[in-house]
Structure formats: C-alpha cells, structure tokens
Image 1 (cartoon, helix red, strand yellow):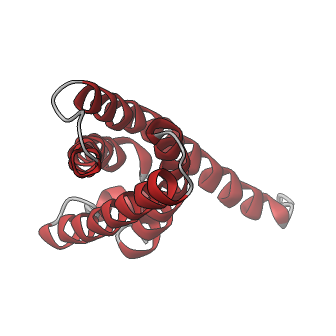
Image 2: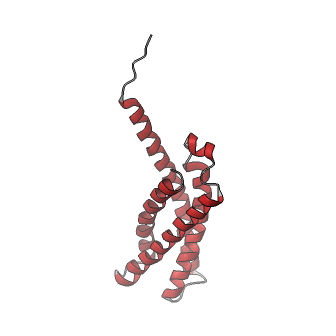
Image 3: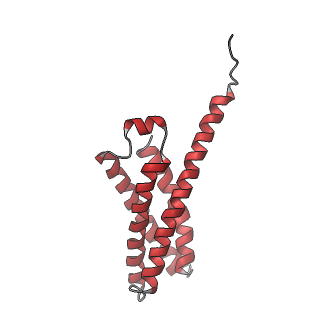
Length: 150
C-alpha cells in the first residue's frame, strides 16, 4: 500500500531543521556573548579603564575570548546536519581558516560599531556592545552557514 506524503512535509522538516540550527546558534551565541561581554566589562573596569584606545583594546581582547568560545561550541553543537558531520566540515584547516577570516571581519565590524556607538552617538560602551553584538551575530551565522558549513 502506498503511503501518501504531504508535499509540504519535507519543506516543513527543512524549515524546522534550519530553525533548530539557528536556535542552537543563538544559545551558543548567548554563551559566547556572556564570555565576550563579561571579559569586556572586567577588562574595562580594571586594567584597561582609561582612554578610548584602551576601550578598543579591551573590545578586541574580549571579542577574541567570545570568538574562541563560539567557534568551539558552534563546530560541536550548531552545524550538526548529517551531511556536514559526515564530511567533517568546520574541522579542516581550510574551514578553520575561513572561520578565522569571518571572525576577523566580525572583529572589524565590532570595533567600528563600538567607535560609532561610543564616539559618534555617545552611547554607553556596554549598550553599544549589546547592539553591535546583535548585528555581528547575524554576520557570523550567515557567513559560516554559507562559506563553511554549506
């Protein structure tokens, strides 16, 4: 007996899978954000508490902490599609280099965003960091999805 398969079922499954992947990325991003934001706060309020130059140094150092956490967790927990896992994508030197390039661009976006927020808009550095992180999160997800894990 032939079983009827609703044509939208496979589309629904694909959309659900993409949603879950993005949800996992959000959870990983949240953990990474806490590492990044916490590092920025600690650095800015202790050892790099002086000039705007020190704010940018603290921003870059904190971003690197968050990027390291994000990279490890994203490779392990986010992009888990069977084909991706089987192919080992995200773990080869070529893929890690691409993740590094995406991270460097993200760091440039973060630093530029901090400049715009703090120096041009005169926002608090912590508020600026939250806004900039949301923007860079989308860059990070879609760049990795397209360039590394596709």
